[in-house]
Image (cartoon, rainbow, N blue to C red; front, side):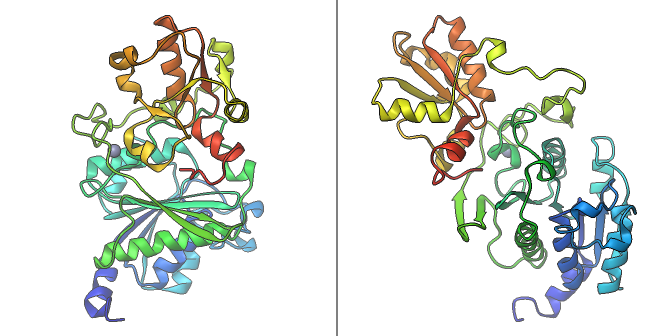
Amino acid sequence: MPEVGVEGQEKLKAAKVLLIGTGGLGSPAALYLAAAGVGTLGLIDFDRVDFSNLQRQIIHSTDSVGKPKVDSAKERLNQINPNVKVVTYDEMLTKDNILHILKDYEILLDGTDNFQTRYLVNDACVFAKKPFVYGSIFRFDGQATVFYPGKGPCYRCLFAEPPPPGMVPSCSEGGVLGILPGVIGVIQATEVVKLIIGKGEPLIGRLMLYDALKMNFREVKFRRNPKCPVCGDSPTITELIDYDAFCGISRGEEKKTMETNGIPEITAKELKAKMDRKEKFVLIDVREPNEFQINQIPGAKLIPLGNVPERVHELDSADEIVVNCHFGGRSAKAVQFLQKAGFKKIKNLAGGIDAWSQDVDPSCPRY
Ligand code: ZN
């Protein structure tokens, strides 16, 4: 192909790509990157091949059940292309090893299935100024984008907060169409190749949403958040943090609901019924402007969480108020603040706008 040429082939041969995870997304991505002639592929995964995942983790086979996934993947990749140097890391990616591993690679491909690792990968990539190609899958929905520090927004610009623990089920709990990660993993591999050869328009600042049931692709644009804690103008996170704690994973502690913490809630369906009854109330969205640009609930007024104290005079405590954010965490903080300021008729939208998309309006894009 003229876009690739000899020069492109040489760039591919010299390229070093780290794949985080060799599961649903990592499998197809690794196969295609090896076949495309990417010179060095790093694979990190601490898991073993399991029979129940083979329908989507197509790099592995029944023969390798029980083996370390990285060994099984390496074998297969070298069968496809013996010239690819495959470096394996049979360990869990942590804040203690990520920067050390990362320094040998130019591009990361994120095939993880948990939020702690994703925030870890993002922050490490921002510090190391390296791009990471993101993909995620659930049931029949997939999404992909490229986070390129210095050239576009980062993961935290788009996902300011992790969902409350337990709210988003994993693929093994919630299920996923086995073919779906094939589509998303191949999109990720495509973006990696484009970044390597420096051709085309990378998915920077564009989130690709794929719906396998409707068989359509949508694209939502998003920008860097100047107030982003890690890539913003005055970052507050300047070194790797405790990502388990950040994502609210405190093992052994009982999960508390918002209600038991004294935060009154309303569900997305109840909110819709309230709208249909034409009840009078004020809806406040406390996300960041870049998130508000992606999706919003009709009639919502934007007051980012950080600006609530200085803009509280815009609200009337006599009004009934509903507060929403992405998943319900930031809006709970806003409700607590407003309760202290004397607001009594105030409720948190449980599950945030994500619950609205799922339970009320499927045309409202999820991110
Ligand atoms: Zn950012």
